[in-house]
Image (tube, helix red, strand yellow):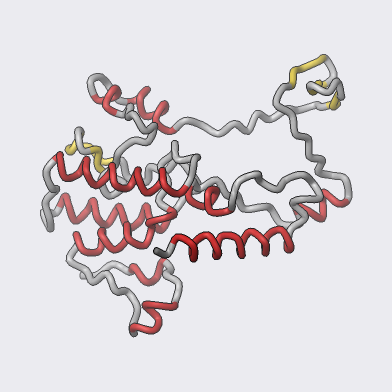
Length: 235
C-alpha cells in the first residue's frame, strides 16, 4: 500500500540531487530510479570540490563500453585517445571470491547461491556453516554501525545469551531478505541491507534481549533518524 509513497519520496530525492548536482551536464544522470541505487548500495560519496574541479577541467568524464591501451595511454571506441602516465582500473572486487580462496572444501562451495548473494543470518552466520562467523562482511559501502551491532550479536551468541534457530529457519529468513532486495532493485546481486537496515537492527536487539525502541520518547522514535549512539551496548 505504501509503494506509491516510496516511489514519490525516491522521485523527490532524485529531483533534488539533479537540482543540487550537475549530473545531467556531465552525462552522469543514471537511467534508472534513485531507489534502485539506494536498494543495491551503489551510491558513492564524492570528494570535496569534486564538481568544482570538473569545472576547471581537472576532472574529465568519458563514457565508453570498449577501450584499449596504446603506447601513449588509452584509446576509446570512438577513436579518441587519452594520453596517460598512470591508469587505475577501479573495478572493485568480488567478496565471495576472496572468501572462497580462504575456505577449504566443502565450505567454499557452500558460498555459491542461486541468487548470487551469500545467505548470512543476521548478516553473520551462514546457515550451512553455523560454527563460522563472517563478521563485517559487506559487498557495498562499508557500514561500521552494522558491523559493530553484528559483533555485539555474535558476542551474545558465543556467551550463550541466545541460541541459533534451525537451519531451515535461518535459510527462510535469508531468502526473505533476498526477496526484499529483488523487489526493490534489478541490481540485487550484492549483499546490501539498506532497504531493511532498521528492521535488521531491531532483530539483533531482540535477539540480545534489548528493546528495539531506542529513543527516549515515541515522537523521536517515529520521526527521528537513528544513529550509532542509539545502539549503545546494554549491560
